[in-house]
Length: 277
Image (cartoon, helix red, strand yellow):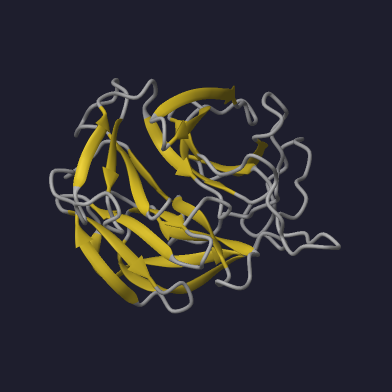
């Protein structure tokens, strides 16, 4: 019910920002790759250097199988949202382990579903928070129709940062505190937001990616990796595209397909803030 946590019988999750004695918010070992989520609840790892996928696990959280989005914490936990709005966590370092329930209460009409990503607090503060982008409906754009929000990983409370002009988008974050969105429908864009105010810091068109039936993306090594499917394609695996955002590959902002068809239809992508900048 509104204002009350869902009773699932699933074990509760601990905080994702607990500090150790010698380090603030350390990274679990081997937590630098991109993880991707299928629409039927399987998680795979994508290695941006080899451009290969590796199957990790199938998740079963309360018997549901329609997944919506995913973020990955520094502890190696996948935070997975289902189409019904429920949010659960999965330990990526213990494949096959049971889902856990963080106790998230989904009662904000601006966030019935949401794209999400962990973002570091700053260059000097590795601790991070989970940010949310309204996922109300494809093509819903206009003044203040959507919002950016932030979920504190300890309290699991969602706070609205500010209204934005897109109600359909995915997020990815970086270890130096930057927040990016993949937004739009008829026209799609990469947008950088100020994570404290939701002010647009930059916007870049993504040609040829109109109306994807599923989409996700992640920041890794100065560039972006986009996972998209063709409009109305509910069967085939996603395309994987590389965006040379920092120009280190010799063609700044070039968008290139690097995998014609992934072994899954990707609806969520998560990369921890441990990933290289």
